[in-house]
Length: 390
Image (cartoon, rainbow, N blue to C red; front, side):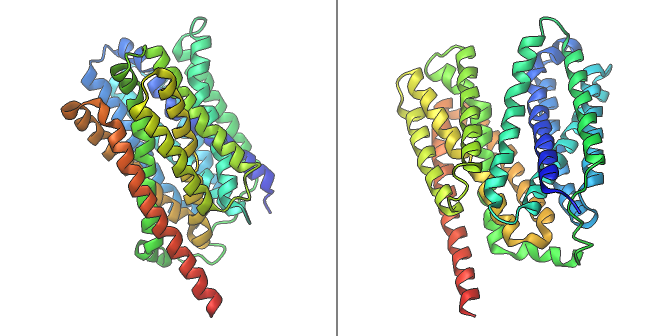
């Protein structure tokens, strides 16, 4: 029998590792460009490899976890992250570097999906609130890596710092080796043929497209905010990066408060409240005439976006408990597809019509998310009423 607190701690360590890994490549991009003498096109290719790896890992983890359990896959993911850290640090050829980045992405995608699914499985109630608390550790990892690099880079090379981060993955893998996880769905009577029915579930499809918008919304803010601020308000790059860090901090703080003091708030109310924060945030970004207005707008946007993934993954886990891993794979893969597609589209819009249309895209995404949320919770309420009526 597993112990919930040990599994939750392990999930927090895994998502922390994913947060570190997700931001690592961008944090050492300049060092890699210098080391391998890369041009802009080749650098862009490197950045495109990791999302493809994450997509592959997200597709893989669900069916495997449902059928065989979490333990072995999480241990293998830690080994893959270790190989990725060491490979990125010490790769001597560009081909080997690309291979390590892909492995890094696959392992990160597995860690992200499997840790969320494990927390959902061990949560008998307040699944979304527990997933929100888990998301805090992702934020700590994402914020922590650039901070550590900034402090230590004057004393150590980036290779030494990445190699040390790799050692952390081994320690986490050893921890997984000595704890028990929830049993596989196979042991609980899981039938792989039932998973095909997930693709026919209108609620799950709606959730997947909500997360398509959520993931892409986060992507355009992460990737285009610094350009927007420097172009629109002539903000220095350092101040733009500072603003982006506070956006992530706002998202992390929201997940912490919802996972603790606000954990009894119903998911539907939480989502609707989050839309108010997002609307206020992007309105300030659109019409703000100073850096302070835009900074406030980014923080509010981060607070609003903090609820999306925990709420919808919590709803998914509640509705599809017998196939939670596979259901998570489906919605996360669609979300990652949105991340890549809308981010690419934003690049075209910025090039043709100007970076000022970042807020136009954000408003459009918010409207679609609002409509999808209405349909999702209406369908859930109708289903529950039918069950009560019977």
